[in-house]
Length: 277
Image 1: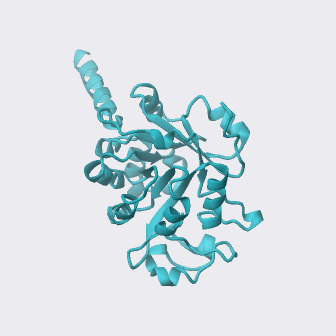
Image 2: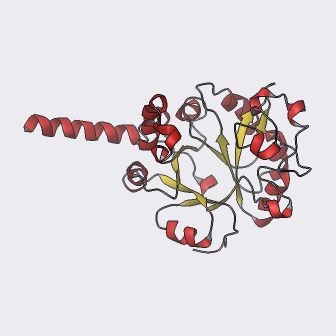
Image 3: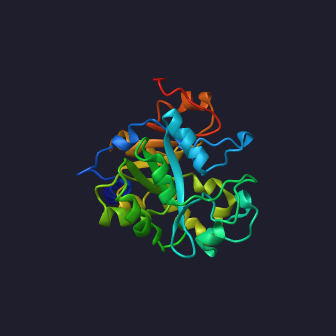
């Protein structure tokens, strides 16, 4: 009986150690003090403003919202702003972002508009420090070259930004090379989705969902899908006092429900009142 108690206690401590965020030498969290971040910019396809486009970012800046956007590398190593790994949904083209050079990507149009896939450099020039940025790195593998290549530009940016990724090794790169930058772990209830229940993905999905991969990256905040509850996210916020960012809030009603569980809100499909408490 005593042995069982000791084993359970040891496993509990190991679990808490693994999910723990950064505890000491936390960076300035000012980038997240802007409570509302426009998801992929303040886009509205009904107005001809597609997601992750320069007009969507300009619209967010004009209204004073922080901006969340996504980064990939083109085939020739240029950081470009696009959400999906595949091009089909937003451009109608076959293949992945990384299959094309920047010049080739420039020939595609977003959601049937005249807008092109922007580069990170263009976005930084447009925003110019006027609102905080939440930069999501899109990488499915251990190849995290997008981090050092993009950070070379971000490090010269005269504005506030923080970074996040579903890939804990991307955030581990920041832990090692740019510990002064606020970093976040994106997470979801992955096993809710059939694709992640496949044997080759199950263990990895379970670890990410349970946030035990925090042991690699020691994030400063957790960004989680507001549709689901999660013990590890709850413990990060309540026990370890880390920031929780909720995604994606799609109505004032969802915002009201999530307000007591999250500190930062990533929104789309409506425009929240920035002065609401």
